[in-house]
Length: 230
Image 1: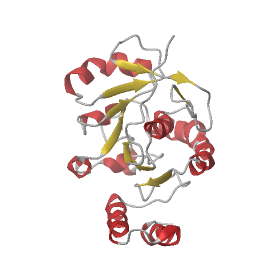
Image 2: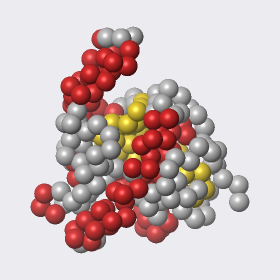
Image 3: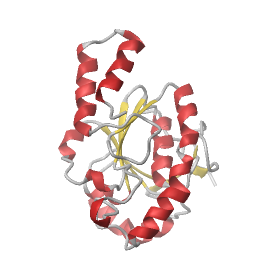
């Protein structure tokens, strides 16, 4: 079949990716208004006006697709899942690890968050900010910022640790080679490959950068260390 070619509509811009982790609870979605946003799975209910909705599970679409069509206001719905719905932009499953450079495919990393990072790269984003990428179960055995999918917390923990977290490392060097920065706006995330900070600290860092433009990589690195948790 012919796969969708992702357009480079966000060249040089910042993209926020909103996953399902518990840390998104309490986020004011209006803080992302006017930004480039990819929402994953049921995060579309929090930000129905996001640019893109991404999912990777055909069963999820069978369950939620009707609601998506009623609620989601964004421009694109995309997936590597074998879904025969003309509203869904199909991308090729290009393998498990690393960064797919061809704009018709994604590496899958066994999870939609991994794939969404690759998708943001295809759109041309030069900075990617992760929200809800906790990659662990929260306090009180809360698995998601929405109602979850009925999977027991212990199984969620196992899946995150054994089949999702290990693959993110394969994105680090390829993204750096392409000049793409990644920030994890979940200060307590189990995903430690990129600087972690609160969303407030990310916006403070962004503001500080805007007040000191053109001071070079050394100054940017200093700001990262100032606002990141480690």
